[in-house]
Length: 390
Ligand SMILES: *Cc1c(COP(=O)(O)O)cnc(C)c1O
Image (cartoon, rainbow, N blue to C red):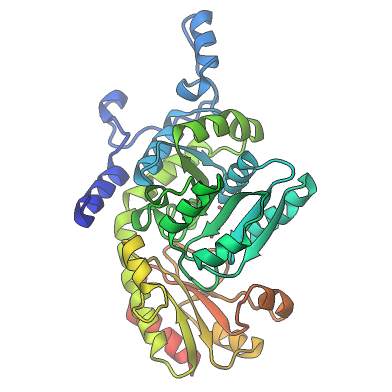
């Protein structure tokens, strides 16, 4: 599909897909079905529904009409067959990983991933699931790092902290040949800018608490894959762990998805301006943003991504905790806080002044500062960074 055609289709999905106003009195947005259970005219009909709960409304811990619309939209945006929504990104990630692993299995992580995802893999050691990290995005190096027991390759693309890209098609091909499942956290790109399932990746996970929510007022997660994987995950980790997305959150997610395309366009335009400014600044050693033509993976990004979101990092020439702290504390428009992907602009660093060994292990410079470029005016954001870097 041509880029512009794909974009039009995505906008249509975000706005209207899965919604049938005629079936709710013409209401332009679907109602929030906050009920916990659904009744049936006869016991036989209830029995039928219970035996195929994924396709019938029985109890909201399984399926719910409002949540289902959000799931249909996310599946369609990712070019997947099915989706389940969760209470948080971590609920989605833990369901996808537990679903794919058993005792004795090994997980290969590609470079840095979200810190709680890494902590989850460490936690899973108690179930005899091991993991290792390959600090390279090169496919040959990744192949070298596989073990006979590797059952899952887990990654974010771009990678956390350093924003390097992985060739998803080549990775999926390598994994398929070896019978290894691939799971990608696609939170950074959103399904608007990267569709990993179309490259052969098996499972996509999201934190909807970032761009998909976009207003810092909604926590959620999603797992998207083919029907077979989602069906099994539904009866196992979804129903049994119970970390579901509540209907009110799903309703708010539907609200947010309607503006996702315009919000992402602003994040992209703002972040590119900010990245270009940083690149030209004498106090900055390097800017890590795959939308910059100087980025080492720019060519790959042009083939694999249709856009670039607003989260990036840069490294100070004077790479110490003291300088990092000073720059962060001097910003006025950028606010200091964790998370990202919302209207506000945020600044932080993985260097907390007490974790030098950890940073070294993660191949992360002590001078690294992370920016979440929000919906504000790009020139104002640049002015703020300019005075902070002086
Ligand atoms: C925030 C985040 C998560 C975790 O999502 P929650 O909704 O906070 O549980 C996972 N992956 C990435 C890349 C994130 O930024």
